[in-house]
Length: 360
Image (cartoon, rainbow, N blue to C red; front, side, top):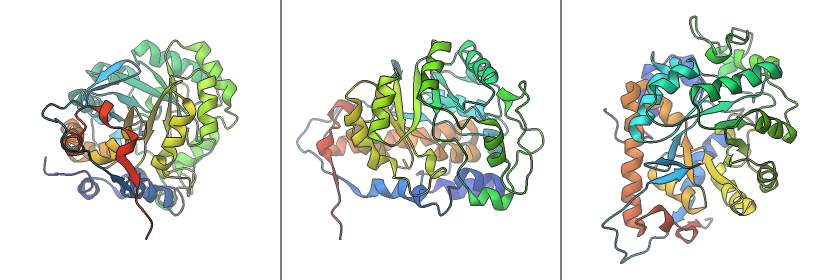
């Protein structure tokens, strides 16, 4: 692989992708303020290292929902991987397995869930959008469980799609030959051209804007899989999630793609960790680009982070090897940062190591 860090990877991926595909992956809602702030907010946190700590042996291994993983980084659910590479989600699953971590497969995958689970050497979780057609939704949940997925990640921040102006300009659609593979049998596999974004039209037509907390209870009744709620930014919603019996919440603003000027996720994390009081695990996505970002999230109480765009850039540049390389870079950066922080294990990465920078 020719890249040495994740920040340099996006431009390498741009050269591999069509303008429509690059903008779809890279873009955010409206002025993309939250998109930028997700990254910038990590830079406003300072690390205060301990010294004279024995760090000759270090381990970043951890568990998420009982699954042993080699580093506290999971593959976030992102759509349409075959826009980036012909092997699509199969390559992503192989790369995640090589890294020793969990892949979360999007409902909007170009590849059937059964094929992805077969290609994976590690756990696969399934991200769920709830469709207006509840029968099709229930069938999708049953299909993911039967395929061998180990958890259900319910995205709750998309009653409608945020306005992604790059996609509107490009009139985003899926190219010929690509479908929403897991929904094709229900008749919901096509995302075609419109005067604006085809995905925005798909979400408005197909997904259920009436989704509420009672539907989390309904989902728990139709599956044995642990349920995560993805898209939480408020402490009171985090408490409701615990009361609804979820296994974990994912602090997420959908990568800055939904409500612009929503807070960067790292700024919302601490209050959510405090609110759940250990009643469920807390994960976070959005803006992670360095190993130090991962450790800042862990210090503030996240069990692990999810990364989306870096995985897509790695996939575009190098297929499964590119995905594994992204994870390897983060692993090396986490290991070095743990040594320099005086934190030989993740249990030693405590909140007192992170302090916001002073303005001015």
